[in-house]
Amino acid sequence: MRPEDAAAIRDLPLFSDAQEETFGDLVRAGFLQRFPPGVVLINERDPADFLHVVVEGLVEMFATGSGRDTTISIVRPVGTFILAAVLNDQVYLQSARTLEKSQVLMIPAERVRVALGTDPAFARAVVTELARGYRRAIKEVKNQKLRTGAERLSNWLLKEDVAQGASGVVNLGFEKRVLSSLLGMTPENLSRAFSTLREHGVTIHGAQMRLTDRQALARLAQPDPLIDSDE
Image 1 (cartoon, rainbow, N blue to C red):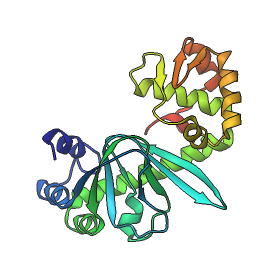
Image 2: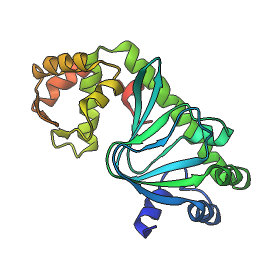
Image 3: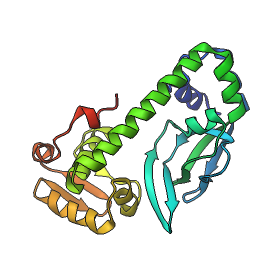
């Protein structure tokens, strides 16, 4: 593993306060692998054998049922999945696949559970990470239930613009069908939402979206820290 990759993983809240011995043991036990786009990394209902850390690329978390599938979230570098199943030694509730060329560190689940019992700082970080995950889940439920499709899309664009440097240009790194599923819409509803957003300063050129009037878009979105903040 490149030193810069190890440093980026070390900076994750989950690992930042762990003892040097703990972190070194987890990383040495892991497998750092590269995957092309479209590779399924884990399947829901399978035993949780590894904690995954996305070092490069994009990973889609998704679920299937009754002949349908839905996107749950997008994991970007440097991010982890799926901690709760690893800690409880249970099956995955979601599947994961790469959206682009990705590099993923896979840490054996048993090593993570051992570290939980031997390193108090790591254990505290695990509890904090699980609490953050719970809060993210509640915020997403509120986002889905309290907002229209256009409002969900506008808030996603505002946050994504900031994540990409606040240039007013958002580059979509995956297919629009993934975005529609992520936002709880059909592709047709996503298209209608984009049409609504044109009146609020959003123009679309393929996979690139320009925010020409951020204030107008914010008036439509009405960002709420109880839904949109990362805290």
